[in-house]
Amino acid sequence: MRVPAQAGLGAITVAAAAILTLEFSSGIDLARRTISEHQLGEHAWLFGVSVALIALGSLGIGATLVAQRRARPLGLVALAGWSLGLLIVATFPKHDWSVGPSFSGSVHRVGSVVAFVCLPVAVLLLARPWRDPMARVAAALGFGAVVWIAGIAMVGYTAARDGIPWWRAMPVGLGAVERGLVFTEIAALAALGIWAVARQGRTA
Image 1: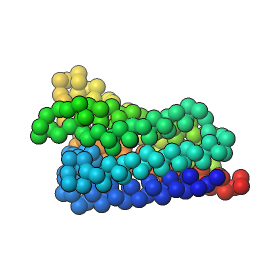
Image 2 (image 1 turned 180 degrees about the vertical axis):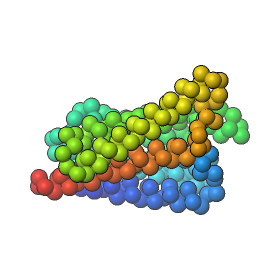
Image 3 (image 1 turned 30 degrees about the vertical axis):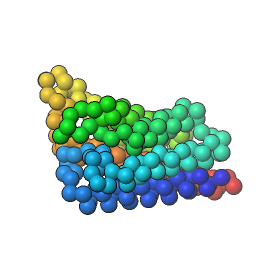
Image 4 (image 1 turned 90 degrees about the vertical axis):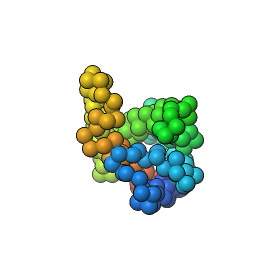
């Protein structure tokens, strides 16, 4: 049952290409502004659809892993948490700071945190026991995402202790840090999907 994972990988690829197009055509400061800044522009719909596609594509990968009967329940829960977080991000735009904080922006932030934290957990659990090369790639990228998150948390803790806004404490800009984390997590997700398709092919 490779079709769900194949469709999921296709959806994720299309979505990533669309978001990359926005990244390099919108003119926003990629080092300072977060990716969700696209929700405040004229192509907000494209960003929302792309994020939703990644969420649905992730569920397709999960469906193939379930069909293989080797998916760990906690890993599936984490993958569902990632998808739910992304759907929240796609539905609720971030704060527009030219206007001020908003309920939508607060919900968006919660969704972002849920998604970012759940994805590496999902990959590390679902790719176990990390025997195949692609499973090891997925796990390595999952650990990489954990390192990103730990680094962000450490900077946030230090900033709070020193009375500095955490987003201003990032050494290379919040946008650059977030993009590094997003790239790592999408790469981990893609590796998980490729591994699921390849494993299904071997067991078919």
